[in-house]
Image 1 (cartoon, one colour):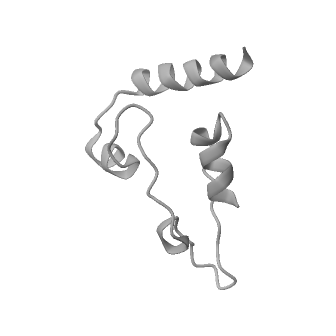
Image 2: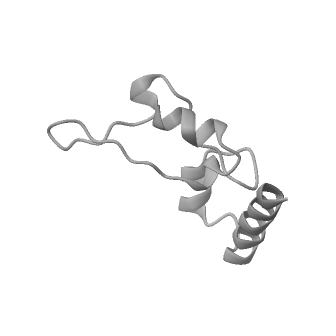
Length: 73
């Protein structure tokens, strides 16, 4: 359900809903058959862009603001 929220809500890409198993182990999207999250700015996996500092804070903030503005309209 959390992947569906993240993938289907207009602002879902901005959510990061973590799910843990009963023993506290994180449950990944891949564990439940989902695709890795994609970057907000390009088609790479978001983890790749974060690790490689592919985008500036300003670029990310501008994209997030655009998403919120589009949603509010």
